[in-house]
Image 1: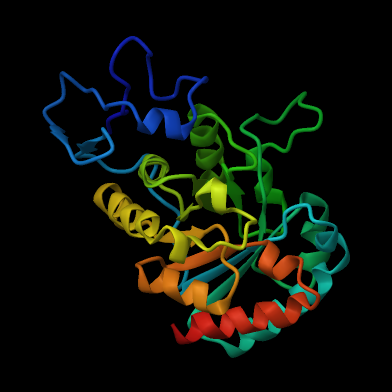
Image 2: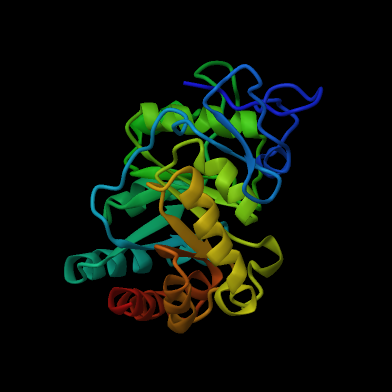
Length: 284
């Protein structure tokens, strides 16, 4: 298995100072390898002719995804049980949509006691040891979670850290949803073999202006970019998703689901908002 590298004198793709977006704007270089196609397919990336790193952790059932990121909103710590109970009821009733709740670490156990499709919002690329204040990625093997988010635009990490964290989480038998700001970055992180990739233009996050209507080309370009390098990795869309119709539009554009936050979590009735969006995705 080959390791992609950057051209020039910047060294390995795993250079610690590079984010996935910065790396994706570089070029692959494997001058001594016959398996590397020297043909650019867009965004200054050469199309690699090798498998994604470490394989991917596939989803158990091929369904559309509604991933809800509770972030660190005040409502996340006061209304989490409402969301967990509603997610459980919806999951028992709906067959085409998978609902994931991405929660702050302190809520893993209380939410997990009610609903079993829970993600962490972040883990760190450190090993077990003297790392006060960090959550080692491998520690997911001891937690009642299905997986974790990584590389959200509000918590970007270097490509080297991202690669290590994703590998550790997969080694623990858990899922990885990696976030990307652009189609270019979506392709870059898809090479790490995540369970899913979510593209979210950061300038639209939290604005109520949905990517599926304001920038539909971001979704279609990301779908195509990920398909070229890792066709088995589903792409989700997020940023500004503010109605069931926005979610359905994203799916019509090729996404396999949506990543949402404030529209549901900050609502006066989060459970009702979750129900409406889940039912819309179910019918998409």
